[in-house]
Length: 545
Image 1 (cartoon, rainbow, N blue to C red):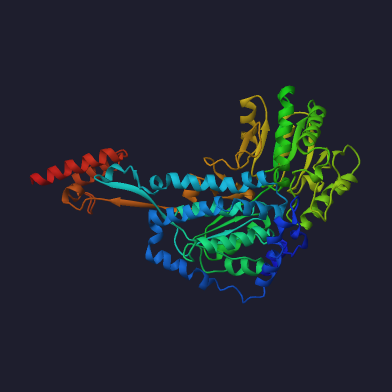
Image 2: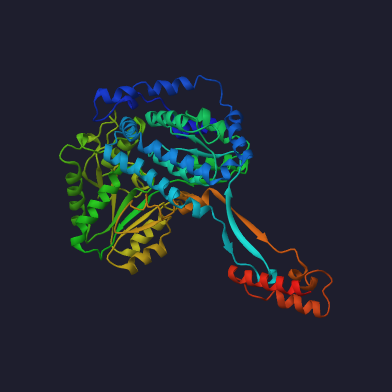
């Protein structure tokens, strides 16, 4: 099976007519987006994508070295910020169209997170671009060493967007790439047509072809993009299956890859959690499970609770759903699944456990309350589903919360350890720091939170990235700077005789010369401040000769 077929299958490229539906909005608000899926359809009839022509202006950008300047980066970062702030209402409308995302959630989870990321670089770029002095080995004195962060190289960073956060996951990465001095090619998710089209429209309006370009479409454009001879870096957010394909394609051209994938992120409520805190824990867990309709890579996938707390916590979880979404969830602020096929899969997961019997019990929601045509999935809480059920073997990626009951902390640890892969996040509710540390020590995860969920996702000072099967590489703030620049070693040594200490480093090594060399290699690292004095001392000695 070739790459194109695999991508078509795994990315689930379909022209979903339900994407035209605007949840909770008027026809007047929706009219500008009614034709968007047709626009993307027409693009598929165009000639095959010419990637060489696409990136030609970006090679010219590198050749001119303008991208190495502070001015080029600041200019494009300011444009990127304006693209978000000036067109906020348009972004909110597009996200409402694609995902039924309420305005506040759309702004907070997508627009504002990008503004925070851009503002970090606007405030810190000059400092980040300044070379960092480095210590030198004693045997190299006098020596002046520094680390200079340079652009990754031509032609550009390729950003392959995801459907669950079609705006945020594109431009959060783009901000770091631009700050690092890299042109960017963006391939937004075709599953969010309104957002994709707006990204393409506004980028064409704000950026020249040597800085940022957008390519819309599905596998028919992803395939030639991945097969291009070389990328400075490929940033992909999505499933592990597609991540493997992206990584394999990148390996053929030695293009480095940043992968943010997913997995089953556990949430554990320890038996030492005070009953008074269970109410707040339930509120936070429900919030994280239903944020973006559960379509978040770091969403709490399943809940593990000690049997002493199970009944109380289940009651609090049901109450939290009712409090946050009211008696009629379908008309509440809860978002929609990105595609009808995704909603259908959620219903299949629920129906499987509805037939399970035994100790399995659905205490809230159920398949009967879902509406696949409307892409609506009612928050569903399932207590003790079968261990081999799809709810406990597949990443759920929706507002379904399976609850696993355990009798001890060790049993909880063993359950997490038995799950496939390394989760992108792990959430621990406990009153004890030692319990938290024990869970972190025994259960590997890319990130860990104590007594909350999801809030690290938009934290500008924390790295966002996977571990093992949940991906590799990370970004956000300083970590984006490191991801999208090359740390170049730069060394200067004065070309004067005294700097070589009488030529002791050159062959042959005999007599006193041998002893001097062996003494020199044992010298400690010399901090940058001391090196300058060594140079001045050497220059003074040379001047007296």
